[in-house]
Image (cartoon, rainbow, N blue to C red; front, side, top):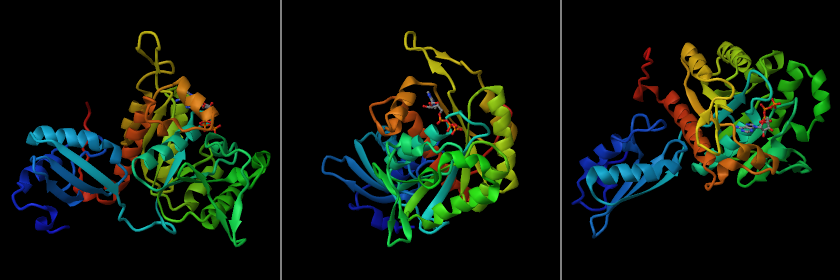
Length: 358
Ligand SMILES: Nc1ncnc2c1ncn2[C@@H]1O[C@H](COP(=O)(O)OP(=O)(O)OP(=O)(O)O)[C@@H](O)[C@H]1O
């Protein structure tokens, strides 16, 4: 994409070893390495140390310290990397590049908690992010983002202004409709309200809009999924058999309406004992993995059952945005993987996924 000569500020820099080292980097999100086309400039300092500027086509900034370490060890010189995220794909809806549905087969598995924290993590990865709470049965995003009591504001009496929750643009069906009314909703009504919120909110430019869907796989969820031009869905489940059986119905529903299932997130996957540090599989083990394998989709993350997650949520704070909280790394890794999957889904020639029996 760039003329190679333009990449290097000094003619004496050996280009190929740097390109090779970047290409050889491997992680879940950068499964095929850092492509040459991501390189913006490379500068060599007097002391031979290198500074590499990258433009990432998906949200993945926080992985750069690991890339620095890898390239530095490969070349045996100190390396610093700065990266900005520019998603070049065409917007799929207004100025929104990707809409990602966060769904669950049944209620109470931690879908909304996961949705807001993924939004926070995507923002930390350098992306412009919004969240739309479409859970008509119990819109909890305002509470999770500390926006309880906020009143929606319109611009020129036409467009609804999204709320700003620490840089995340947020909108909720709960601001418009009292949740008690949801019990009498039908599919067309719910999907109409969702379309209205999507259309009439002044989202501006967004890289990722996370939609917190109502739990379940009935008529309402089906109609809503058909209405949204989604790039993909993430299904949240717990390891319990019942939740997994419902998650399976979720996969079937999204297959039916041709929304790609990006993967499963196993929430409340295990509990780390605060005394001995051992992982206890309170609700069962490997269930999501088996389900994922059966349907040829990945497990994007195993999020532990953690008191911190609940406590932050109750205070309207995002644990994923607190770099000091160990769990934030789990949400970041999941967010990078979702962003990378969305990118490679469109640039699929670049990657070949082989699923083996072991
Ligand atoms: N990993 C976790 N560790 C501890 N508590 C969690 C975790 N995930 C979610 N919770 C807690 O579980 C409860 C249910 O979570 P949440 O509201 O996100 O579920 P949900 O699937 O969106 O529910 P609903 O389907 O009713 O909308 C909340 O009290 C939340 O704080």
